[in-house]
Length: 439
Figure 1: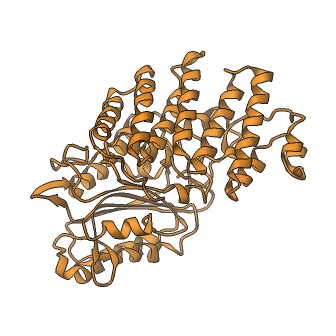
Figure 2: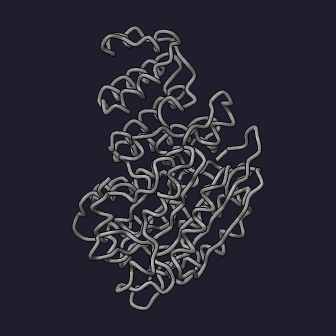
Figure 3: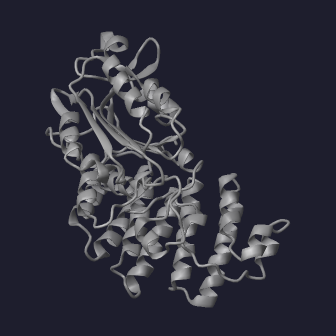
């Protein structure tokens, strides 16, 4: 979260394990195992901050009011806050409200033995924006899943940065979800990357990598959704931040493997002279573009306001311009290709976004420093966009190409390739096309 700043601060980490997710007496999600593993990571690493930090773990709690009291105490922390929840989402069938199930929660007594989901947002809503991260590793039961599909998301608080996954009910134990009582794939990937990386990746990078490599079952809800991503701008990937110190970290979004929500203005593209065609392509021109020769803020504003076709047209014009000036495999051209990928993601065109990310990855692999972090980041963007696809034909078509790209990445952890192959195989064998996931 990069929240070290002037003045006294004190951070807080609150880790909560709820009820297990069980199917046919087999454990599909083991929150206690997730909590125990995450609790071994130093709080400073979890927060990405060196401020003094309090850590509280709740495991096996049966009283919703105990959880509420801990949430209230955590929300009062003046510094950065991380709230992690793992367990089962359920619902009150009569009241149509979502609940976070605790140990001992039963379907007949949900309202009295589980935590109403809105309690979480209610306690966090007064915190300043940018100080709060909520990390979710959940499974929805058959009562909660229809509500999630209806909502299209899992709301928490506008001021919180929310990352996570919600698995559908009855997912196959073969998916890496801690089905044997071990740490689930999503949480394990967060922990592995935090331990292995010499420089802590941003939260959005960690999320992208974890979501892409967790072995999620088809149809799983990945947060934030595409709609929510389009409402915010994201950070520069950590590797590129180190190379371009003049770009500051902003409120993160999806998606190190690479943030899928990095807005165009966050890309470390060097300003280039305005091509003569640019003013004519923008109705009325734009003073910001004319003043400093950088069209990215205007293009991003177009995309953020829903004018995706115009944003894509301008980005394509700039890419063609820098390709002519600097060459098709230049860093400038690659950066604009990746901007176009982000714009496609903002427009909800995950097929195009994945294809653009894969194209950028191939070009980077073929050039000098092809084994550097930029190629991995581009592959990460493709992986994330691929995980957002929910129609069988598109998943398979993009997945075949993506597996080939991942296979060509030098130094890639083989587990990621294996998980991509497993997901591709699952969709290839899934039969009829599935409707696209709601976003």
